[in-house]
Image 1 (cartoon, rainbow over the protein chains, first blue to last red):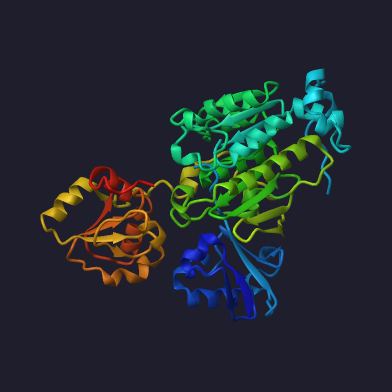
Image 2 (cartoon, rainbow over the protein chains, first blue to last red):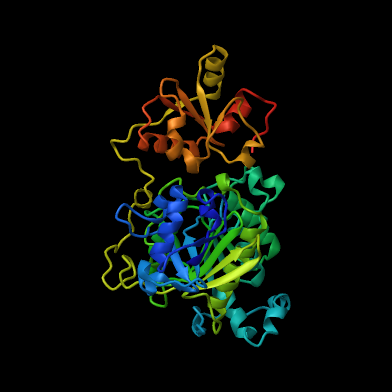
Amino acid sequence: MAKLSIPTALRAYTERQAKVDADGATVGAALAALADRYPDLRPHLFDEAGELRGFVNVFVGDTNIRSLAGLATPVTPDSVVALVPAIAGGLR
Amino acid sequence: MSQPSLIPDARREPLSHAEIGRYSRHLLLADVTLAGQERLKAAKVLIVGTGGLGAPLALYLAAAGVGTLGVVDFDTVDESNLQRQIIHSTRDVDRPKTASAKDRLRALNPYVRVVEHNVALTSANALDIIGGYDLVADGTDNYPTRYLINDACVFLGLPVVYGSVFQFEGQASVFWAGHGPCYRCLYPDPPPPGLVPNCAEGGVLGVLPGIVGAIQAAEALKLLIGGAEPLLGRLLLVDAWTMEFRELALERDPHCPVCGDAPTITELIDYEEFCGLRPPPDEKPVQTITATELKARLDAGDPIQIVDIREPHERAIAKLPDAIVMPLGQIYRRTGELDPDRDVVVVCKIGQRSVYAIRALEQAGFPGRVFNLKDGVNGWARAVDRSLPTY
C-alpha cells in the first residue's frame, strides 16, 4: 500500500483523482494496481515490455526510483509516491 | 553547494553613475555588490520563447541589468496570449513577439542591449545562435525545442535554466552537463505526440508561468552573480492550485545518451523525428471534412456520428448539436459504442487532439470511415454557427 500522487497531466485517466491509494509492496506493484484500476493510464506509464516510460519519473519521497531499486523499490503505507511526467507548456 | 559566477573578473564591465543609481538595491546586497552588478552588465543571456515563461524572465533580467538579452521567437502576438504573456500588450496583437518584447524591454531599461532572433530555433542554427551567450533560459512550449536546447547546451558547455508549466503545475531546474544532470538525464524520451495537450489545448493559469518564469529569472541571476546555490541537481515542482512547492533530487545519468560516460548522440539530430512528429511514410493520412461540408451532409439527412472528444467543461463553451461525448482518454475502450456502417466525424477544439483520437480508433480496430473536423469546433463556429464563440 502506498499513497500515489497523480499530476494534472495524467488525471484525465484517473477520473481526475489527485491522490490514489494503491496496494503493493513495491513501486511496481502499486503502479500495476493503479493501472488495473484505471486501464486508460497503463500505456502512459509502461511500454510494451512493462518498463517504465522514459517521459515519466517516479519519486518515493524526494528520491527518483531510478536512483533506488527502480520498480522493485519497496513502499510502505506511509510512502508518498509521486509521478512526475514531462510537461512542455510555457510559450503558447 | 554554492556556484562561482559564469562571468570571470576580466569580463566585468564598470557601471556609470546613472547605472549605480538604478541598481542601488542590488548594490546594497552583500552577496551582489558592485562586482556582481558589473558581472550582470557583462553577461549575455539567451531567452528562447517570449511567451508565458519568457515574458517575466525577460522583464526581470532586463530590469536587473543583464547587459545583453537575446530573445528567440518566430511567432506573432495573439490575443489569447495576453492572459499571461505580460511583456506584450493589446496594441501588439499580430506583431512579431520579438519586436514587441524588444520595445517593452528597451522602454524598461535603456542600458540593456536586446538582440532579436525572429526565427525558429533549429538544428541548423542553434549552435550559431546559442554559441554567443553565457546561459540559456528555456521558455519553450514543445519537446523538440527543449531537447534541441538541451543537447546544444551540453555540446557548448552552457547551463540551461529550465521551466515548464501545464494547467496549474510547474517545474523548474538548472541543467548543466559537467556540473549536474541534463534534461535528458531526467527525461530520456519525450512523450508521444498527443499524450499531454499543450497550453493551447490544455489551458494554463495565467499567473503560473509568471511564478515559474520569475524563478527562472532568479536562477539565471544567481548563476551570473555567483556564490549562490542554484537549482542544480534539484527539480522544483509548483502546484499553484494547492500552492505547494516540492523539491526532488536529480542525479546525472551515467548512461545519458548526450552527457553520459559513453555518449551516443554527439551532434544535433532531427528533433521533430526524435519526438515522433514526422509521420512514418506508410502512415495512412487522416481524412478531413470542413465545417461547411459537414453542415451540408447533416442538412441532407446523412446519419453521421459526430464524436466530441473534449472534456465536459470545454463542451460548455461551444459544441455541435447531437454529438456523442467520448473524452480522448476513453476512446480506445469505447470504440464498440460506434456504428461502423455510419461515417464518424471526430471533433475537438482546433482539429489537433482529434487526430490522436482517430489514431486511437484505428489502433482499436474500428473498421468504419472516420473524418477529422477541420479546425474543430472553432472552425464550426466561424463557418457555420456564428452564434458560438471561439476559444
